[in-house]
Every structure is written in C-alpha cells, then in structure tokens.
Image (cartoon, rainbow, N blue to C red; front, side, top):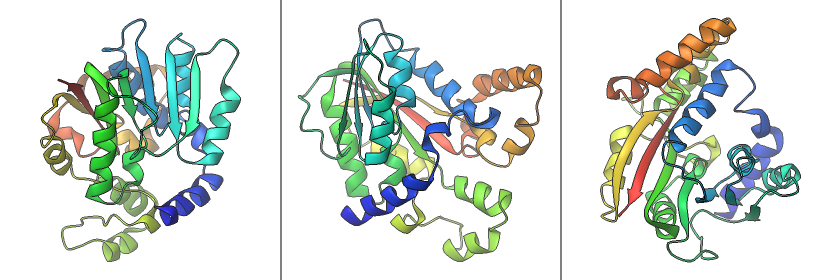
Length: 263
C-alpha cells in the first residue's frame, strides 16, 4: 500500500485534480450527472461521508448547501487544498485516511456515503472488497451509498484513440483488450459485469441504479462536446441525462456510478 501511495502522491502533485470537473464542458458532465443523482436521495439534515474526497469538489458543494460532511482523503496535497476551501460556518470535518479502514467511524453513522475516488486506485479484489465493506458498515440502514469506478474502455478511448497511443495500449492489453490493473498505470479499470458480480456478494445492500456519469464526453466525444455552443451544450446534457441509465450505452462512458441502499 505504501508503494501505491507514493505513486499516487507523485501523480496528484502534478495533476490538476482541483479543476478536473470544471475545466471544460465535457468534464463538467460528470459533476452535473453525479449531483443530480445524489440529490434524488439526499434529504435535509442528512449526514454525508465522502470517502476519497480529493480536493473537495463534492464535499464543499454539499457543505455550501448546509449539509454536515465528513471527508476522508488519502493524498496529503489534495487534503490541504480541500481544507483551504472550508469557510466559516461550514460543517466539514476533513481528515487523512484510507478507504479500507474507516475505524474512526462507528457502524450506521451516515445517511449518505459517497465513494467517488477510491475504486479508481484499488488494484486487487481484496482492497476493493475492504473499501466496499467499510462504506456499507458506516452507512445507516436505509442509507444510500454511491460507488464510482472507471470502465475498461476509458484508457482505450482516451489514451489509445484520442491521444494516439493505440500501439502502447495494444501491447499492454491481452488479446481481448482487457486493460491490466497495475499501480504504475495509476488507474484501475473494471468491466461493468465484473463490478456487478462483486456487489452481488453483499447481502446487506440492494442495487438501486447504475448509470454512466459522463458517457462519450469522457472519451473521443469530448472533442465535439467542447465545441458546442452553450445552447447546444444544454441540449447535449439533456440527451445525456435522458439516456445515462441505458445499459447499451454505459460501456462507452469513462465513469460508472453504482447506487446501493443498505438493508
């Protein structure tokens, strides 16, 4: 775990995580979609936990809406940026921590648990299962848990096709173009069917919904979406939100959001 943490510290020291969700039209779709779905289930007075809070885009967004938010982040530089955004009166408790060990929190503490970052950087089934189990444990019965993960096709579309590294992608993958999950490549990716299989092993949750948070905006579609006028972009967002739950389109998305309810 320490070697993975070192890799991630080096990566995020150079990467603009703070501006990722708002740097252009295409990137903003993930945030627009995610908040729309979270707010379908978020109630006044709910207590929120964000695991892997990054630089606080979601934490601060919900703190500004007067929610009490606990934020856990592994990377020191991200956590410092998050803390700098906390304004007087905000009910935010931001700490450094690991998604696989939330022992600082009691069972059944949070109404809504957001796990948007950790699965991007967990490379073994054991670590994934620890993170999922902890997220479930600290969530109240009837509470909602939001898990985001990256699809197998994301690096193929982004780095292979859009950035011109198809040869390197081919050399990395097996004959079916399954992308390997290794820390040196920074991001762990998953087939939708495989993640659903993992989730089916947990008998104390039920699946509520699954959806594509960015659709083709995360890949080659970004080129065209970023050229849209503001008026046409609104139409595209309307299209995306109308179709993001369609199973036949999900695999083209960079990110998938799996919504579960603890029972």
